[in-house]
Amino acid sequence: MRLALAALIGTLLFQAALMAADPLEGTWNLNVQKSKGMDQTTSDSRLAMALKIESVGSNRYRQTIEWGNPTRHISETIETTNWDGKDYENDEGDKPDGYTMSIQRIDNGHILAIFKKNGKEYSRSEMSVSPDGQVATMHQWGTGRRTAKPFDLVLVYEKQQ
Image 1 (cartoon, one colour):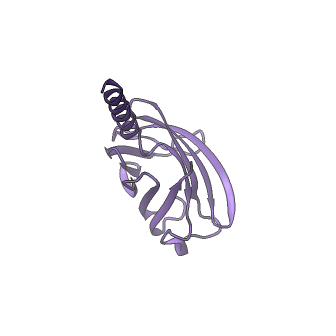
Image 2 (cartoon, rainbow, N blue to C red; image 1 turned 90 degrees about the vertical axis):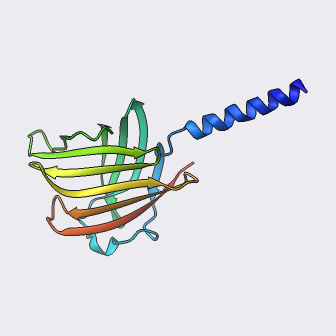
Image 3 (cartoon, rainbow, N blue to C red; image 1 turned 180 degrees about the vertical axis):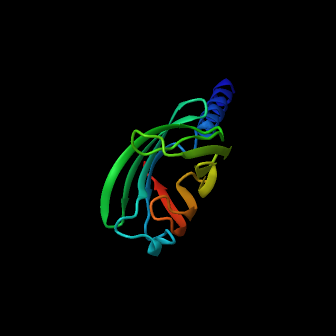
């Protein structure tokens, strides 16, 4: 009887540890075939072809982003951001240019990012993870930072094991 009780408690603790894991953490690769709006991209477009999300503190995450498009790799960025809904500088280069980004965790498997220029919103990005934790869908819409053209993308990412 004690052995069965110990096995049950061990199983419950293991399941609780799995459920406590952050579903957004991990390495995600873009599935171009399942994504929508790719016709709005060009050879100069920058898409997050791969994402690696790691917790580095309370509501603080490191994102390694492999930028590119379906035809070529462009660059890689590593950034650490707070997911607290507050605006933080999101400038490119070493001079402030008025761009900010806020990321807010809506719930355990859902975040919202809002991008602004001089306080005025120009785009949004929502990311949500499927209940099984294997697919993340990112809906991005607004006006392009570099192109100033409207866009509406649904990017589908698959978690790598």
